[in-house]
Length: 285
Ligand code: ATP
Ligand code: MG
Image 1 (spheres, protein in one colour):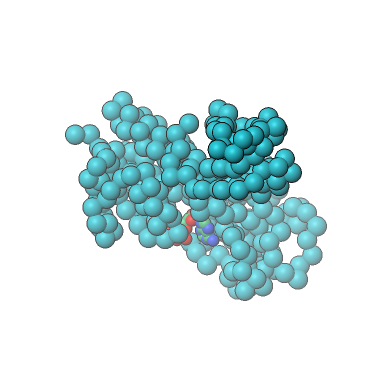
Image 2 (image 1 turned 90 degrees about the vertical axis):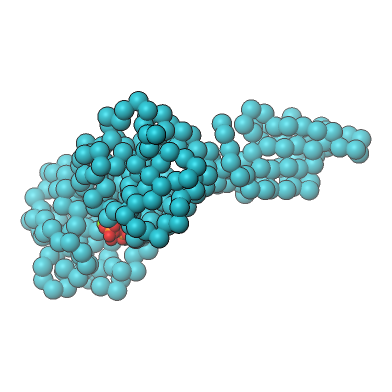
């Protein structure tokens, strides 16, 4: 039987979340003690554990059909792969930083300077688009020590909290781009593998929708139903059920997690009571 081969990071910041996503999609992996590969018992998929740097190349060559990795690696490696879905985890910034006592006004600061990075392609394209001449020093890791040892005037690297920069006497001066985990695919998958990918994508979207949405139930006087329905559009429109108490109804709907607190305030203004908000396990649109 045809199996879709998916590459995930062997160990690092993406590994756990990648496997968790597959699990939430109902895919059971035989005890993943992170060998080289493992198979699912209930879905036509095989998981390959690799270094994230290698995933674009393997997906381009068809060693793996699809893969999960940070967009930053996809851009840097610039292989012939398609990005099929953003996955909403491992978010980070790719930023320029310089020694904290330096005066910084704007990007022209970097003209004629040296910048150390593990992402020479992304940075080279950026400076080119800004028509700046900057010398790029490619180094494999520990980029943040480069200015301190006289290797460069500044750095370009992944920043999440900024604590690494601070510890090395640096300050972030420009956010060049933002990255998150994505699902990439070989652009020439055969039809039978495309079908498996579609099935997987359907599940991934259901999982992501469910984590972004909450189910909400509340009681309201009948005269408020119209106003409340406007605040709570739901998937189609809210469900309205009569309560045993005359003149009152129970209203059910779905709200976006990030709009939740705003909506609650508006609902209370319209006379809503007994508001319950519960997690959604899966959501199919
Ligand atoms: P590998 O051994 O697989 O090459 P790595 O050391 O290159 O691993 P990790 O540090 O595990 O990679 O990071 C993997 C990805 O996680 C990054 O490419 C980036 O997309 C994302 N990421 C999110 N936050 C951070 C962060 N604070 N530091 C580094 N990477 C981060
Ligand atoms: Mg790597």
